[in-house]
Each structure stands twice: as structure tokens, then as C-alpha cells.
Image (tube, rainbow, N blue to C red):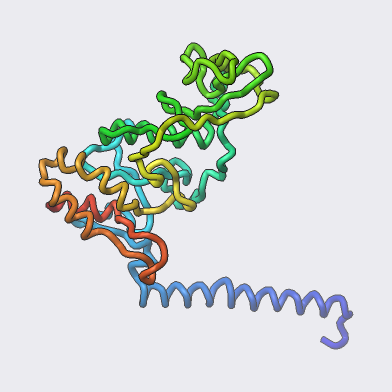
Length: 278
């Protein structure tokens, strides 16, 4: 070996290091950690799967939709919060929408292009839909009555309700003496001054987690406020006393982490399974 050229010795040493580290870190370590996880934390290691009637019905740590084939809410079940992970609650595409509070202007659809809803319009549309489902007002500040962002693009001689495509009637007729027009799909309004209009809404019965996705898009919980909002509808659909449904909510509510971090939350899957059992 000493007679080998130095460059060849260096390459052989590098190859040996790659082989050793591959076996150690690519084979022995993964097998050891997997074995320990399966032996000590079998349920969690396999995805915290929840079963009912001998069948897998979901995961305790990943949310899911309770909708029919058309994507409409099944009224006898509590509904989860929205998800921005893939097509919804996709653990291979976990993440948020990455849209911020300044994302308020829609891209209206035109022939050959679908368009794009702003974060504000998504919130407005969700709030309106939840309000209709629960029989309450879905109105929110900065939202129009038809469920889009109440946003104007203001020019020297006119104002445009940029999220309301013609022939929709603008949510306000005028702004600071300027006539407000509906938006024409495909027209460029970037030069106008963006003015979100708050409106006169003071009471918002639809809670924030009903209209916004979690950071991961996989949150299996909802707030107590959202659960309480849904309770009358679920009780009515199932023919159960409202007090019984509220008791099930309490039984499936987790407290604050370490007793002081965060807020109490309701496990939607476990709550719906408890309803089915009852």
C-alpha cells in the first residue's frame, strides 16, 4: 500500500469512508431508530391511526374533510378548519398558502385562464359559506355581501371594485365623489391606488379558524368557538339534545399545552366518532 501513489491512496481512503458511513448512517442507524420506534412508540410511529369498527378512519394528528362527493359539508358532522396542504390535509404537501395580509386583489378569470383568488377573498368566501351552513351572518370587515374582498382601485377620475367582475353591482356606489365601477376581467388596474374598505360590520360570529388554514395545513383541531357555532346544526341534524352535543365537545377538548400555552382545542375526528357512537 505504501508503494501506491499518494493520489490513489487518498481515493481509496475516501471510498472506504463512503462505504463505512453508508453502512453506518444509511443502514444501521435507520434500522435501529425504526426498531426502537416500533418497540416503544408503535402507534405514533405508524401515523397515530384511529380505528372505528375495525377500520382505519383517520389519523389523530392529521385533519381531514367531512364532505360528500361534491365537496359539500356533511351536515351531521362537525367541520374541520380549511387546509392549504395540497388538495387538503395532504401530508406530502404540508404547508400554508404563504399569502399575507396585503394579498387583497384577485386575478379575475378570463377565457383560457382560471384566475386567482386573493387571501382576502378566500376568507370572505369561506366566512359567507360557514354563515350559510350554520344559519348566522357570515359578514366580515373588508368583505362584500357576495363574499369577495371589498377592495377598490382608485384613479383620478374613477374607482373600480376590482374583485367584483362585471356585470356585478359594486358594493358601494361611490367613493370620495368618484363613481365606483365593476371590474372588467383582463383589464390592468395596477396603476390605481389600492383601498380596502372596512365597512360597518361590528359583530363577527364566524371565528378565525373557520376561515383560515393552519400553518401546516394538517391541524386536526378546531377552536371551542368554532365547535360551539356548529353544535346547534349537528344536534338538529342528528336529533340529539344540544346539551348532549356540548357534553361531547367538552369530552373531546384538549387543554392548553403545559397548562398555559395556547388555547383549548377540539379534536374533530374524535368528536365525530363519538357522535356516531351516540
